[in-house]
Length: 272
Ligand code: ZN
Image (cartoon, rainbow, N blue to C red; front, side):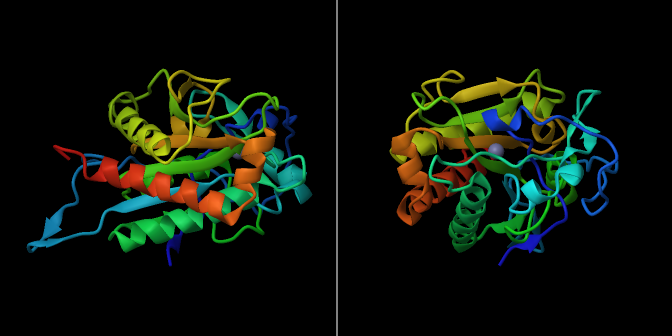
């Protein structure tokens, strides 16, 4: 089972995340943002070895949103740093299928399945939340999880809530990049995830981004990450065909298998 930290990466990349009216004076149970020193060293590099024994690489998986967010609006609307000098709400409720299957349940289940596949391959996984019944954590705490855990990669898992006619996945990256990792290795990670999702039978978004990649300035989790980080919007939950896939255990396993394959391809890329 993965270690769980009190933080994680990710802002909402979902269309339905955008309309939350921020308010001040929220509750205190969500961890407050605190500056985290950037750990030196090559992010995303091959695992170091000590005494000849390889050390398992660490990957942070960040399941978007949380099951009790909707019941705690003051806490999740509290403003936190967005990584570009502004602020945005701590977190959001996420979207849902028309039948009511919530994004937070989807992201947590896919994260657990992805964790299982990665740990079977010798990767140590850290989740940004321990269950699907809590509040938060805030996007700034999620966004700095990679550096706290000395992670080789950080992958935030979401699903979108767009117009029903649109479908497909997209991988969001911080842009304009705020450091060389965001400009370089994050793109390598994002491309590996994109290619693995394609290989897993999923298609590029028909309504957002280009070639399955979306360059975004507004996602705090990505902006604040100093380790290679990407946010995957796996599907459009408002599209009937994709709603059926995300609502099924088989469909969620397919997403997890593809995400794990993409992460492993990134970790084991030539020259890493
Ligand atoms: Zn989301």
